[in-house]
Length: 469
Image (cartoon, rainbow, N blue to C red; front, side):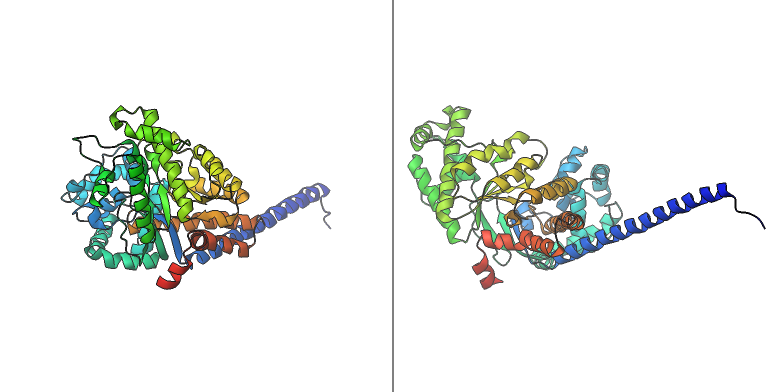
């Protein structure tokens, strides 16, 4: 009878032990991965059941872009992705040329640069809108699939109002806040879909740009003339601004919006009325930049006091600036610190994660009872930074202080933004559930709050939604 070899026995048992450990570990790893996916899916599916209150958009009707046929390239030109296409080396979008050029020529002009953007979040969220609304199944846009997609777009845009209604509800929206920065004195919106945002940039900027004798007045002063207001001094100016407040309130404005980081710093010092009055009386052409800033600073402080009087929250653009080229430092969130200290009764809503200063942004939501955080546009700027930053924000900030918005001009991109936002929130929350930092029940509550309930409470929408929806 053959005896067992003790050497082989000593070698075999450890090998069996090691392989057993590896197999068990692999099974456990796969099980954890499945659990990760299932938790994510449940949270993501829950998000799809919510009727979304979208706290920031710039929705246009197509005719507001001019009398053009609408193809894929027109939608691309209105999108954030157009900035990445230009960064990749393409020329700007000429709408008149796009009306006549063939698809092959347009692809030759933009296709290579568009392909270079396939890794960006601007690209990915733009695709998602077409996947949701058009049944677009590809990951990338190509010369070939754009033929079919453009035909669908052109058909839908023959009757955009009908298409918008269909897409709006298919995407899961209940209400969109619309900031009409391109026509800031308009107070008429289709209230089946939209809530009015009072865009206050002109009230600030025009204070340092008073028209001089013989010169053409700017849009703010033209609006004053059209409405029968004569402005000869700062008191008159403030009377007209007060009129604009009342007009917006009468048309159910839900908040104010300041996007001045696109043109100046967000640091507003507290300037006394008498100093501002003297500066306003000077010809604007003779104001130094520092003096012009002082008048504008005074105006924003005046507006904040009005926001308290009318109980209107103030949305403020912070961080990254859309487009190709600007002064990034203008939007640094920390520059607003003095306002949060000085006006504890005002409600400030900071936008965009303050990217790339997401830590500063989160800190303000934690430090101040009257500072809220809208993660609008952050996922489109950088999906991975949104995941990282939102996880950090949940560590720091109570979740009744968050909102979501799309910040887009047409329904396709707004839909892609919503899909992308849901993806990011579900990913962050599912990981926190897996790490036993949250239960699924609380994760569902956070989804409710971000995409709906917080906006209803802070912007006082209960009566409006009860009556109209």
